Image (tube, rainbow, N blue to C red; front, side, top):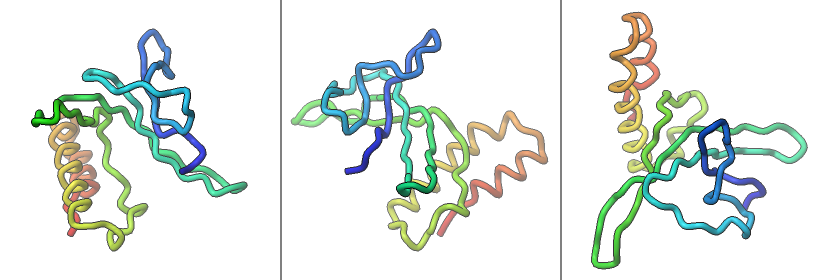
Length: 132
C-alpha cells in the first residue's frame, strides 16, 4: 500500500532491471518467484514532497522447506553490510526481529572479517555488535 516497487529481477550483461519477476504495485508484474532467481530488495521511505531514503541489496531465491502443502522458498541475502544502528529504534523491534538482526550481523562479520585488516575488523566488530 505504497507507491513504489520493493524489488526487481537483476540480470546480466548490465541489464539491471530484468524481469520477469518483481515486487511492485504494478499488477502487470505477476510472475511467481523460482529457485535461483536474483532479486533486488529495496525498502524505501518517501515523505511526499520532501526526500527519499532507499536501502538496496541483492537476494537470491533458495529452497526452504517441503511440507505436505508443497515446496517453499525463501530469500538469502547476498549483499552483506552492517546495518546502521543509529537508524534503528530498538524499542520498536520484537525479540524475533532483534534475533534476525543479530544473526544477520553475525553472518556479515563471519563473511567479511577474514578479508579485512585488524583496524577494519575492529570497526566491523563494533558495527555488528549484538543488540539486546
